[in-house]
Amino acid sequence: MGIELLIVAIFFTMLLMFALGAPIGLSLGGIAMIFGYFYWGPQAFNLITTTTTNSITNFLLLAIPLFIFMGQVLMRSGMGEAMFHSVHVVAGRLRGGLAIGVILTCTLFSAMVGIIGAGIMTAGTVALPPMLKRGYNRHLALGTIMAGGGLGILIPPSIPMVLFSAMTKASLGQMFAGALIPAAIMVGFFILYIGLRCWLRPEDGPPLSVEDLGTWKDKALAVRNGLLAFSLIFCVLGTILTGMATPTEAGAMGAFGACVLALFFRQFGWRALQESSVGTMRLTAMCLWILIGATVLSNFNLLMGAAKLLNGVFDDMGLSPMGVILVMQLTMLVLGCFIDEYVIVLICAPLFTPIAVGLGFDPVWFGILMILNLEIAIQTPPYGFALFYLKGVAPKDVTMLDIYKSIGPFISIKVMVLLLVMFVPETVTWLPDQLFP
Image 1 (cartoon, one colour):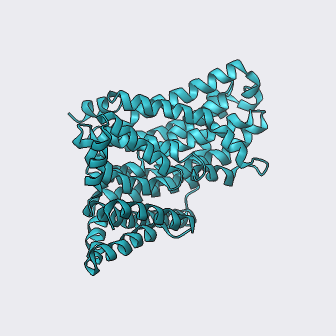
Image 2 (cartoon, one colour):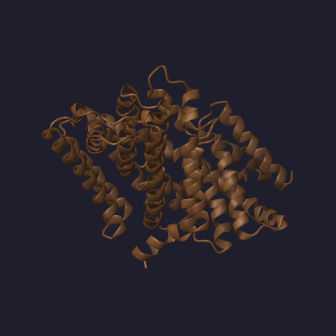
Image 3 (cartoon, rainbow, N blue to C red):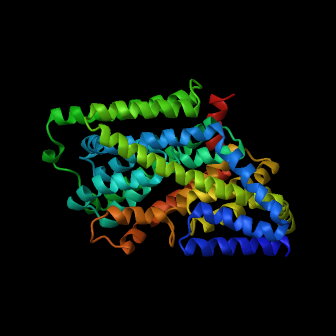
């Protein structure tokens, strides 16, 4: 069997296994070994031991359980509810103020959890019912939750960024710094869209009444809670960006700080510690199994010449360097409709990044492009698992059709930001160049 047919067979077998509901990590590794056995013989199984050892001994991966534990503790500490309340108090009197508050709060919350589900489920549980109760347009409310909650993989500490750096040896500190300006642009566009929509159609986002905002004492407490959240973000990201700590050290600091904040809110005991630890263990184990399986498959693809084949295909197509990047983006976008972001990063990063670097592009810039692409893919039907996160916590009368209809404007904004970053690389590279000369 030629390499071309082998790659096609692997791809469709992978989709079939996912459709059957097979475990992702075991599916990817099993597919590689089955095809490897017929391609190389029994020696193909040597790939498992070498790949597993190299994958799980990467020191950078130690940051994953630390950041996940920080997010798990914060989800149980009351910090999410406190952050939503504080921003609502500040912005509630504006048209669309609750929706703007959701975007700002999800931005802060994303800077503490590094995953998607936490932001969407917290916002969907805490902020969605009050928005619907106060007469917000249903599609605007749902779209805002999806847009804000999805920032978890773009705003550091992003777990997919950690995985990308581990797979490509790109600097994680530079990745974190490079994501900040695109994230700020995206958040700004979200807020601008909500503000303009509610200014043109006030009924879509009515302001809160004075009674809803509470007393001055309530406002002071809300602002204090918001400042506490910001202090944790500063400790985690500030130490990384200033070079005072490695991402792993900052993750440990964040995990400890989350426990302190949970104690402050009097919602941290043995039960919360146990639940947070078990949740961290499960998510970390899931990431590692996917990492091992995807790395085995990626190494098999590379050893059998997939990268060389891709280079030849791009040469035959006569594409410009930017045209090659565009084809890669479209490929990942299509993959994102069927598989989750971890798998895409682990399979595509080692395959596409060397080609992009060979064409003269910055690996950090390409990594942020990949993350922005995943921002879109995770909310795109039919897979778009972030859509199902929201459905799981939304009121029973909210249908999947409502959620599908709500994402259009926000997906359009994400596409605009992706194109902006693609054609203006300085939006990513400028800040890392200033902080890491």
